[in-house]
Each structure stands twice: as structure tokens, then as C-alpha cells.
Length: 360
Image 1: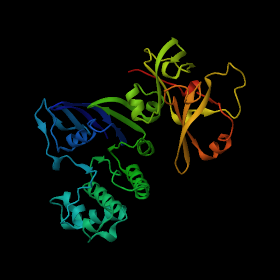
Image 2: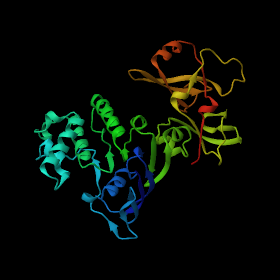
Image 3: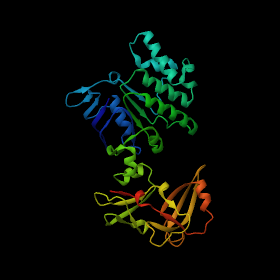
Image 4: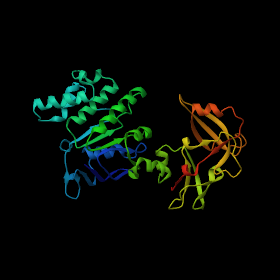
């Protein structure tokens, strides 16, 4: 099972040039608003038409500009879950799920609809209309409709974005289970990095219509190829960088030098560290030469139910000049309670193995 995409489409000032493949299982598609995520899905589904290129699903061309192939949407056997669900308001739940089954015999239609409604745990809603459903119920029905045609590929465009926090957690679990059982390529578009990380093992990152990174999620998080990709994957801390040696770099904006664990093949333009990798020493540094250890002062803190985000200034106390904080650190409240009342400066360590080196 494989979906191969090589398409170009020009829309005024925006140019989509998407080239990637998806094997069996979910692939998360990340990117900022306007990066081309939804347009890519719509081209794959046949709702938009690329200017040139190919879309190949399991060895069969859905679109091939060089051969004049452009299958209509209804013949592509692709299930699509839209961000706003796009249920037909005048049709019942059962009729919505049956919509894509076309000329199937009544018995076959009834069997498939019943099976998908049961799988989504909404069989009791079969006679209701979309206006009578909650957001979570509409999402389940939309997913049932996409699966009822027994698609060869599944496309999901921000399927959880319209849900509140409680429902999102429930539906995410249902979605992860469904994608785990689906045999075929599945593209899962989202702007929520944590959501993508939980659901998919592999990522594609789109930037201004082009693929900026692709591969296993662990690799993209551990070695983002550029600052833009790092920011899209949630990086909060970065500085301009200047190489001193293959394993030592100057963080210009942090006014310090850092040892790193792995050299970058090309010169690094930026250095960074993720907020949860900023480590606080239980006491002061053991000696002045402790690797990547610096005094810091708390500028301000932001609280969530379980974590604290700390905005830190390195080297000097806040208020001594007009500069803002240098680093954000995220810690669980239990750890925060252990050191919050200690006299400042505190000391942070930026472990060499946690340092990210990035190009422009």
C-alpha cells in the first residue's frame, strides 16, 4: 500500500510543489496556515486539479499530467474527513454514511452503514440529522462516511480542530484506534504538534507549499533541518550561532558558548534547545567548569494546571538592561515546588545532547 505525490499547482502568489510518499499507516502533515496542507489533500481527493505532476495510489495513477490522466473524485476510492465534517444537513446520519456507496445493492448499503456506525459507536444515532448531533458525534459520523466506501486511502483535514478539549481527547483516542486498524495510506493534517506526535510515527512538514522535512518523528524532533521546521515542531528557545569548533558553538543572543554532542554537516546558523530540556541544578554548579551551566534569574512565570513555564534571563538579573528573557523552561509543578523559593541566581544546564544545531 503506497500513495505517491509529486504535484505542482500555482495560485497567484502561492505555488504548491508537494513531493512525498505515504506507506501503510498514518502520516502527519504539519505546517503553518497557508503552507498548502489542505490544498494537497484536495488535489489527492480530486477536488482540486494540479497543474502538473502525478498522484499514484497503489500503483494506479489518479492523476498524471504527462498522460492526461485525471480521475474524477468519485472514482478515486479515497475517504475524506473535512475539518467542518461537511455532513449533508438534509440527510440522516445513516443516509450521510451511505452517500458515497452509489449503486451498491440495498442489502450491501445497509450492511456497510451498520458496520461503520457500530465501529464508531454511533449506531443509536442512525435516524438523527446533523443538527441534532454534538461536535464529537458529527466527527464520528464523518469518519464512518469516509470508511464506508472501503477506501484505499484516507485523508483527514484537521479532524479534531473544532472540538473542545474534553471531546478532543475522546475523539483522538477513537481516531488513533481507527487509524491503527486501517490498512492503507492515511494523511492526517494538523497544526497541533502534540496531537500529531501521539497519532503518527512519520511526519511531513510543509512550508510555503514545499516539503521542508519528512521522515520519522523522532528524527525530525531530534535533528530539525532548519529553524523553521524546529519552530513548527514546538521549539521555544533559539539563538543565532557561530561555530567555534566542530563540537563547540557560540550562542550569540544568549551570550555564551556551548558544547554540543554532534557536529552539523554544514555551518549552523542557529542553536536551540527545547523548553522541557532546560535542566535546573538542585544546587549550584559543582565547579566553575561544569559543561553548559549558567546562572539564571526568573523574569516571570506562566502557570497551567500541571506545568509552569519559566522565562529566564542568563548571566544578569532582569532589569539591568532592556533585553527580554533568554530562555523558556517548562517544568512539572512538583519539580517547581522544590526550587522556587531558593535564592537566585539559580543554575541551568543545557545538556550537549539536547542542543539543536540548525541551518537557515
